[in-house]
Length: 248
Image (cartoon, rainbow, N blue to C red; front, side, top):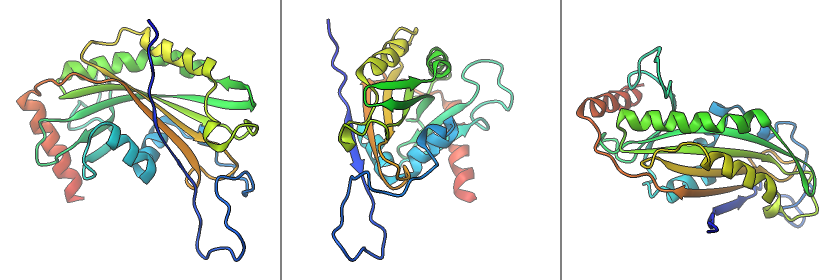
């Protein structure tokens, strides 16, 4: 039976002060070229960008039903995990604490990126190495679930340089249907635990402008995680982490 994958999205463009004296045009290809392409951002870098860029962060939190003041941190080991963990997940790619005063309802997210570069309107180059890593992110998310976090997710972040898809409008310069189906089924064909949720994110750089200034973000919480009761010992470690960060 066909499965509908529903995304919520935001497109954004930026005008810098002082304003130009003539007409203002947004969502256009007539912009200075930025050599810093979204596809060059490594995993930790794109997750920090996601949390540090207001349209992206707000869209993520909205789709996960989180308050704006949610505590968020990436690339976490101590004090949650051992310095040199010997089993999955190894580290925590993203940790979200909706109410920092209540460490018992933590969201753990394990993420992998897939790099997609449009070479023409209808053709992509996709990193096969990144596609192969999608099984690993499911294993890591299953490992986070074994640690006992309240909610656990595997997250696929598709980074799209869509500038060459210029025959389409700004909002349509994302992954081709064929390539998205390939990514989607590769993730779903992995042994995802029934308690673990699955998130897909597309971050597209549609023009020559910096992704900080203009872009398109789409998020699908394709499978909701099932809540678990966190162990008391894990709550104490989360409290220690959030207190450490507040004291910096």
